[in-house]
Length: 123
Image 1: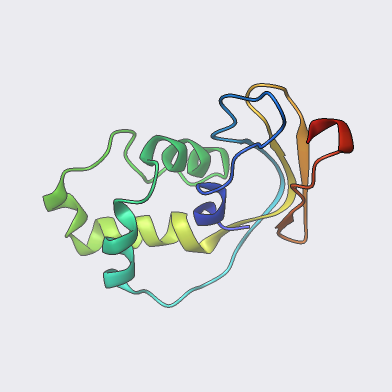
Image 2: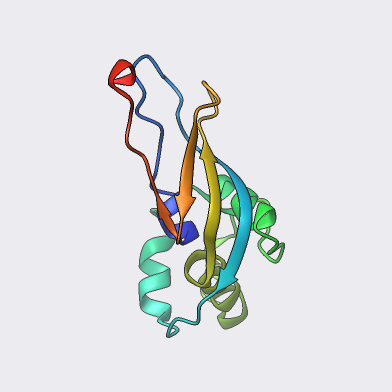
């Protein structure tokens, strides 16, 4: 599971008011190369919750992103875009879990696929 996907997921358990961001509990992390596309990254930048991405990338062992949202001039730099690209698209959670910040409910991640299915009493 890419951190791009993680940035879009939230816990939808009944009664949960703040199910984002899900905490990552990594067991196996892999890197998969992806073609660099600066236009895609510039377009995605405004759609990303920066704090969630920066925190998740640190948990996944990649600490090259700044904690604060970079200024627009930084976003245009090739160096920043390559770091953003690596964190967003190339670092994968292969095995582990995503944990709801409010309830502590664990959602397993197996072979890079998060299982976000809810139990009957959670719907």
